[in-house]
Length: 335
Image 1: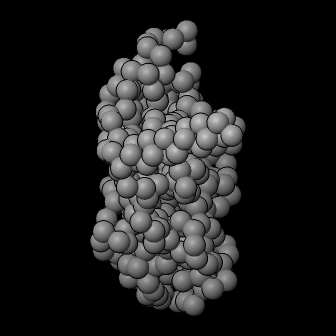
Image 2: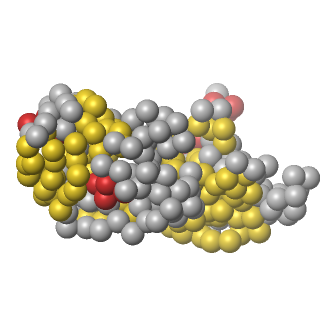
């Protein structure tokens, strides 16, 4: 009986201590013990990512020169456990993988470009948004990640990648409803690799319970075209070439006014394309320079007739669109 009484007293004392601790503000995390060994803290941010009252702590850090001749970077999130009275690691970009690759590879030359927080879900918590550029022998790839923390469990809610370092994002909207807008380079099929036709923007937000692209300003016409002076040495045609319509995508903006065999000889549009040294017809670049929703007018030859066709451009994310920028084909271009 004495043993049971002593046990009950010990449990009551522990419960009282835990309750008292739970009501006390969390101490600052001991980052020297939490970040990887020999890493130096670069930046510390705070945000309520899991919805609990104590904000999570987000830390970026850099390590010493490793055997790959790189200074590895890391991004971690620490969450306060009031019961255990300690800070726990709930996200580590070096240890979290996507398609078997770490979000931040300690073996690669990496730059953490941006870190921000957004309220993209209808819930009392924010999401972590960050972008990372990785440099390698084949060039640079920049990725944008959205990480959601539900019950302190991290999951990748959205990911996007582009083979460029000219990528940026911003969070906009009210405190209760926000969206993520990403800006990147738009490379048309006739543009030199070092000279995209322009920058473009797309917006990511909540739709049907998932984060999806809601708007994309890249234009969509819905035509398969080739240059009228195409040759073995210039498969799509020269920059001065007119465009012959080879095919039309059903339900696309072009389907209402174009016919197969039409020849586009010019167009009037609100925006100009500035690129030179093009790899094909300049008319393709001029179409790419426009934005979704722009109204443009085409001058065409249809048999022995000269016509003017006017339409409003769609977006690459339209149901009839390819959803991603069309890639180069040796025999035609999709615009």
